[in-house]
Amino acid sequence: MNVLPRLGDVLVERGWISPEALQEGLDAQAENGERLGQVLVQQKKITEQELLNALALQLDLEVMESIDDKQLRFDLVEKLPIQYLKKHQIFPFQSEDGTLRIAVNDPLDLEVLDDLRILYGQNEIRPVLVPVREIISAINRTYGQANDTAEQIIQDLGEEEDSQHLFTELDVGEDLLDETSEAPIIKLVNHIFSQAVKSQASDIHIEPYQQHLQVRFRLDGVLHNVLSPPRRLHAAIVSRIKVMARLDIAEKRLPQDGRTEVKIGERLVDVRVSCLPTAFGERVVLRLLEKSGKLLSMEEIGLTATALAEMKRLLQLSHGIILVTGPTGSGKTTSLYAALSYINSPDKNILTIEDPIEYQLDGIGQMQVNPKINLTFA
Image 1: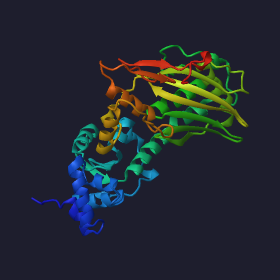
Image 2: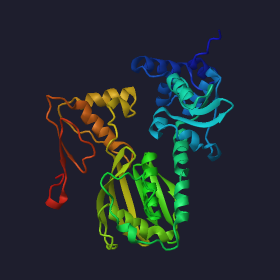
Image 3: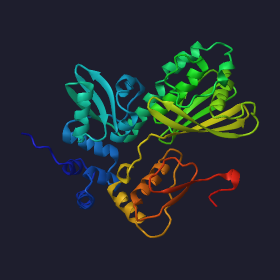
Image 4: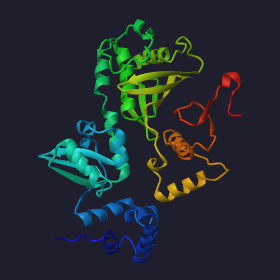
């Protein structure tokens, strides 16, 4: 039986780390219980690529620095929820002769690999080591390219789409996936919503320019182009969204804000709509909030063991302020609700002031801001 070389020995032998730096990493590992490779990367003693190269030598695995567009296989990816792919940092990209090649960042997560073997019905799972950022990028690009249905809907639209059907209001509880009898422009808007929810986008941006129209999804805080409908469809798309959000479709000079609720399969999604006039027409931003989404615990929001312990310590203090900052889609709301759930107990009286209330929390008093009656954060 061959004995695998130790990761630290591989790193030292290759000159990627000094024995002294390795010992510092081992000491830190003994304290926090994390894997040695993760500790060394966090301490910036080695790069992620050096870690992957060392793991490849240790475990006799293949390494790829990136995943190009030719390797994106939506037929393989769609079998798994996008949140599962991102949580476990995996990306299946080739299935051939009973072998599934899958990009991974952690080849030692054997439970996930066993689950994939069963799900895909493959005799062998062949892990390929790839940096995390490249795996996430491949996932986002794959879902960004999955717009064939939208392209077909656009082809079905005539040069001058009848606008009468745009004024049909959305029935409460109507499933947007049940669109077989809808007019093409409604199908297109519904498809944009369903693709955004399926890809776990936090926002939809509909942006008119002089010569073209662009639809973008915000995934993990980064905007991605997903669709470029004909410029002539801009007014119809915006009007349909305004009807759904009960906004004034005749008002195109002033900003408007509204809200609607859509059902996609078994998923109920709250949509905040913002319309802003620009030089080339109204720009629309839609913020998506899945009401049926599961609240994450403090252990599930992605903190390292050290950061998690420190955050829990701070939350137990009797007074103070914790600032949670970051760009759109970075997880601020998720982190705050996880923190509230952590400190929530029968012996505490907790009151929040929110705009909007995105999740209902049992045992916590939640107040909705309403500027129209001067009920603000102040």
